[in-house]
Structure formats: structure tokens, C-alpha cells
Length: 259
Image 1: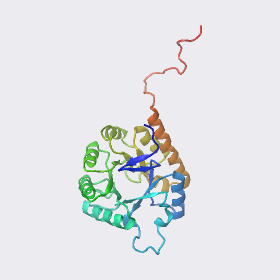
Image 2 (image 1 turned 135 degrees about the vertical axis):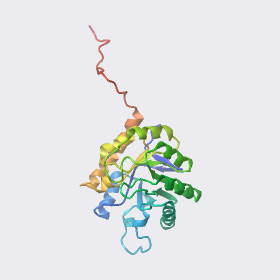
Image 3 (image 1 turned 45 degrees about the vertical axis):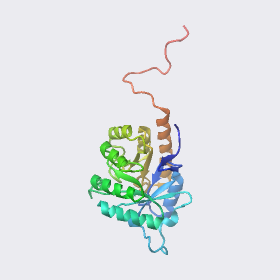
Image 4 (image 1 turned 90 degrees about the vertical axis):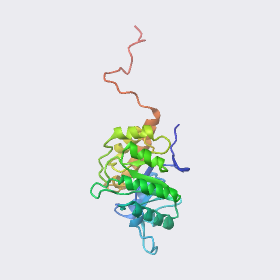
């Protein structure tokens, strides 16, 4: 069924594109990029925002919370315990039970610590959080996260901030075959609009990105490009592409021609 909305845990987002809030040249550019993208949700790194002294300028002042929902994330956490503490802080400070859960296992690649991710997911679900975990593109891990109560699974397309695009579409296809009851949202690795379109054409429910827009020469223009790419990719997926063939097939068939 065709729907422009991304739905999880009873929530509906008008856009399937989720953005980050880091690495922008300035807060005004960030706000303009968010508007150009049409996003309905942005992530906020709890550990990188001054939540105690609201007298100082903060990126939160540049987000229209009447239109854009906040998704606190646990970026920079290297253990389940640390991630759980950070999620609790985010819920208290930002008044939301949503959390983009990150438990990093390797400082160089920023790949997730699967064991820690699963442990933190189970604990946070038990505490009433709506958990969206950043994970590897492993179908077994995705199934375990779903069974642990995750509201969506968020496999990486490539390492965070790499801009390499979708490195393993086969893994994503396998994952999409198995995970049909909660959304699959590609998180990390997108570099340009075609990468976002590929993710959506595969059947992913959404894409989360930050560096591809924030680090672009023109972040606002790139944000609009990503909006269009996500919409086009989703529409192409829902429309059903033609099968691939080894040989040519005439666009104007020769049968039934007038002799």
C-alpha cells in the first residue's frame, strides 16, 4: 500500500527522511537544511548538547519542535551501561521516550557493539523507551533486536560519515525479507542522492543521514536533493520495477504490426 508516511510504535512521520544536527557550518544553515529536506524528525546527540544551561545558544533553539520531533541519540557511548544512562538523561531533558540507540564497539570504524546493543535495547524497552537501534546489516542481529522489542532496526549502509553509499545491498535485501513487521531504516554511509534512492528502491522504509547534507558544499541544496531522492526511490519501489533481462526486448513489439 502506498503511503508517504513512516510509521513506528504508533507514530506517523510525514517524511521518510530523518536528519542529524551535527557538523553544519552554523545553526542557521542547519535550520534551512532541515526545512528544505521536509524532515519530520532530527537526531540530537545527548552528550553533545548543553542541557543544563539554557541561557546559552543551543542547536535546540534552531529546531521547530512544533513541526520536527526530536530523536535523542546515545552517540559516543561504548558500553550498554553508558548508553542506558545517556538515554535516561535524554528522556528527562527532552521530554521524549524516543531514543536512537548507539553502542559503539570500535573507535576507528564506529561499528556497533552487537552484544552491548542488544543488552541496552532489552533494558530500555523494559523501561518504556521507544528504541531505534543503529546496528550492523546482519539479518540475525536485526531479528534479535526486533525480538528484544526495538521499534525499528537501523542497519548501516556503510561506516558512519564515510559517504560510501550502500556497500552491501544483498545483506539489506536479506534483512528486508525477514523484517517485515517493523521499519527498516538505513542509518549511516549515504553520500549523495543516488545512495538514498538505492536504499529506498530496495524497499527500506526510511533513511537517516547527517554528514552527506551537513558536509556538502551547499547543505540546503543537498537537503532538497535528498528529499526528492527518498521520495523517488520509495515511489519506484512501490511501483515495481521491470525484471532484469540478459537480452534486448523491443520497446515497440514487432507482433501485431500492420503488414
